[in-house]
Amino acid sequence: MNPIKRRRSPFILFLLLVLWSAILGLGLAQAALPRGESPNLAAIERVESGTVESGTVDIVPANFQLGQEVYLENCTSCHVGLPPAILPSQTWRSLIQDAQHYGAIIPTIQEPLRQVAWNYLSTYSRPLNKGEEVPFRIGKSRFFKALHPKVDFAEPVTLNSCIICHPASAQFNYRSLSPEWIDSP
Image 1 (tube, rainbow, N blue to C red):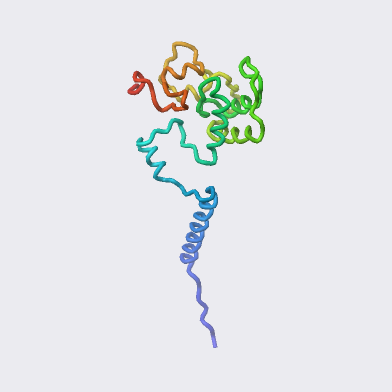
Image 2: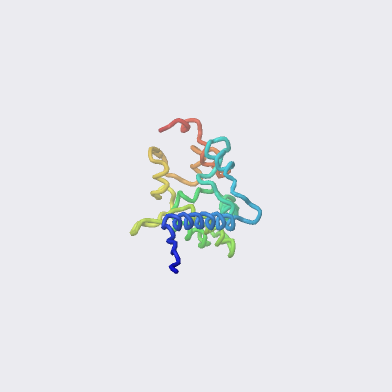
């Protein structure tokens, strides 16, 4: 008696592998969300379609919102808060660790809140290129220049000059522009 050996099709094995990966991926995605929270795609679609205005450049997921709050609480008491993309990560790292802040002595953010703020700032800023000098003024940052490609600044750029073009910058809203800039190229 010769038993018939059934050979499994590689295609069926491939489909099973894809199905298993998809199920595992969905499970991991759900596990990464805070308990009881579901992905709110409708809210993201409203922001992207313009029916809800988001003041920051990026939509900040729930796991970075505390970092954004810590950053804004500590910085906006003296000046407008800048979107992290304006300065490189190396500048932010130095700014949140140093009590010497542009000629003023300020209280530094204490751990673990400093780490929470750093997670937010480092995620939404960019690293410098190799050999590039760390800018400590926004007008010297290539990221700031890239975000303002056709703007000719008559005066040196300061934190408080942001409000000229971004009237809601005090509320961390850099999407709204003053009337003369709304239709500019």
